[in-house]
Image (tube, rainbow, N blue to C red; front, side, top):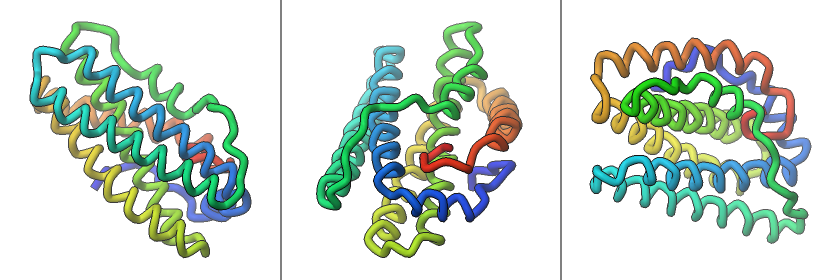
Length: 192
C-alpha cells in the first residue's frame, strides 16, 4: 500500500518488546507531535475549510491516541518520560522543499504521509511479532488509523498540487526515506 522501499526488520519488535515502557513513552510523544503537526498544517490552509475540518479531526484523533498510550503507561506502572527528539522525523524534515507556497504545502503533506506510512508499518510489525496480547490488539487498531491518515495526507497533496507532480514527488520521498531508514530499527523507539 505505502510502497516503502525498505521494510522494517521484524527483529525490531524484539528490541521494542524488551523495553515496553520506553517504546510506549516514545510512542505517546509521537502521537503528540502528530497532533501538533496537523494543527500546524491548519495554520497554513485557512482558505480550505474542508481540509481544516479534516485536519482538526486528525489532530483530535492523534491526541486521543496520545491519551490512550498515556493510560496504558499509567496502568502498567511505567514512568512517563519527557519528550524526546525523533531523529528519523528530523532527517525527513530536511527533505521538505522551501520553494513556492504550493510546493511547501504539498511537501509538508507528503512529509506527514511518510511519517504515517512508516508508523503504520511499524505498528504492523509490532502486531505480528510481539507476545503482549493487549498491545497486539492496540497496535492493530492504531495501524488502521495511521493508514487512514496516510491516505488523507496523500489525498490533500494531490488536491493542493498537480497530481502528476505530486506522484513524482512522492516517489522521491520514498527513495529519500529508504536512504535514511537504513540507520534505524535498532532502538526502543517507534521510528528508531
